Amino acid sequence: MLIGEYKHSIDKKRRVSIPAKMRKVLGDRIIITRGLDQCLFIYSIEEWQAIAQKLSHLSIGQPKIRQFVRIMLSGAGESEIDSLGRILIPEHLKNYASLNKKVVITGVYTRAEIWDEEKWNQYNSTSEKRADELAEELGQQGLY
Image 1 (tube, rainbow, N blue to C red):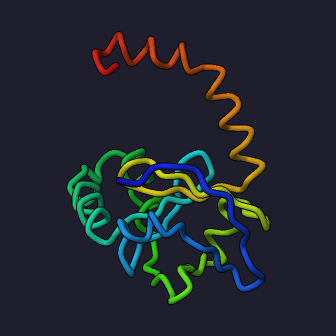
Image 2 (image 1 turned 30 degrees about the horizontal axis):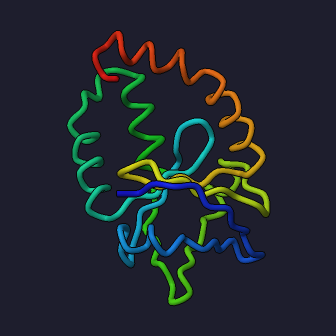
């Protein structure tokens, strides 16, 4: 299970440390891809295989589905966690998420996310203000 919020820096070579607790769950090799809300998603190889399998079975006849599958799969890449616990963020993904020097790595149960620190602070502030409203919507769907 991936949970928590950790602040880190990206070095000049585009490497960032993955928190030790997350490395235990993710393993030595990970998949990193474009996420939603302009962040990056990190998956263990096993979790990624399950997601990619589901995506591959979606109908390619619908343009929105094709577009989403392309975004998720074409941007994905495998990365190894080095002996210091770091991963290399590909240039195209760093640009996609507008990552600057300071980032926040969050755990979201089956995946980790990498956010530019400023973007995370804005997103989190807005989300926290809407927490009651979001819980009510989930409650109406029987989820909370």
